[in-house]
Length: 390
Ligand code: PMP
Image (cartoon, rainbow, N blue to C red; front, side, top):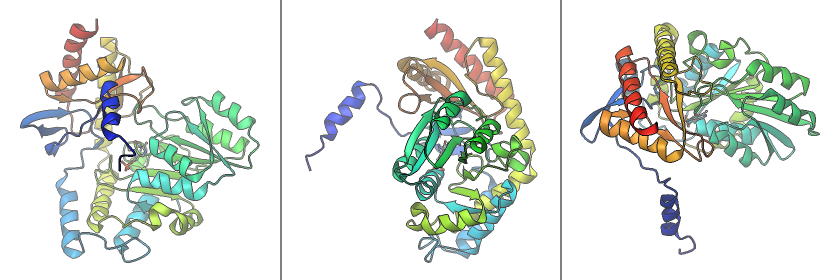
């Protein structure tokens, strides 16, 4: 039991000033919540469309709880399947324009399960340097060779594809990058995939619900559904629920259903969560004003940051706006002052989530924010910026 000295490991994390804490919010109602009895303005949730506390989703979930079990009682291949799962899979496929879809318990499990089912030792996987951790973990689990290319850099990707001798190649990228709010050049990626005979997988966790017609995501926003072999997404961000999915050809989905270990060997989600997800996607399809407002707010915030002379990297269109600070301690200090003095929650993001020296505040918006909220956060940042940074 003494093989690992957890105390000294924690001391080491503390010494690097990287110890993390969970915060217990209550009365969460985007963009406001309570923390330690005080009302906080949230600029750090993934509830992009403000649906996580929507009454219609709650009613759908509660009705399902009374119609069905709380827990699903098994994996999808045993007692844990219901027609509501197939219904959601149909709804997702319809929105995304794919032949079929498969629900996983989270986006993380989808990436892990899909990559490890499709790739093996003979594969070379070309992965954007800023891809989400679950993609990297999926590649490691698959035992494929990981080849990382420079973030969104097609020269870097092509150079690596050109010298590859492997017959089995997969290019994998986030659609919208979670810490940068920029969009992968999917059109160019698809071009290179054809030129070098590689499969393409897009993790659209942050694009689904936010971009494209009916919230269908980054691929359709860029007009390139064809030629993308695998689309991954999550129900935990714009959809406001929990869960993940993979979409693609009917045959691939059939294969994943049989082989993907995170699908086969885990109890499926509660039916109530699946019902609420269907309700949410139907709302997203019909209330496009949520997307439009979100984009308007994000553009407004980017404009204000330009006026302040602040760097938000390549963030564009999306509700993820990084405010680049660089130094880890400074980023933490500003985030703490926003919370302590202005009651704003905007997390500081540091290593290992982003590269060392690229610490930032990650602002994320919801359609329930308003212009006054943005003005308030911008003025607060300006106050702190003036007193601390200069
Ligand atoms: N992919 C990306 C790009 C993500 O940002 C996240 C969550 N932060 C995930 C996958 C995992 O999704 P989930 O939270 O549903 O597990």
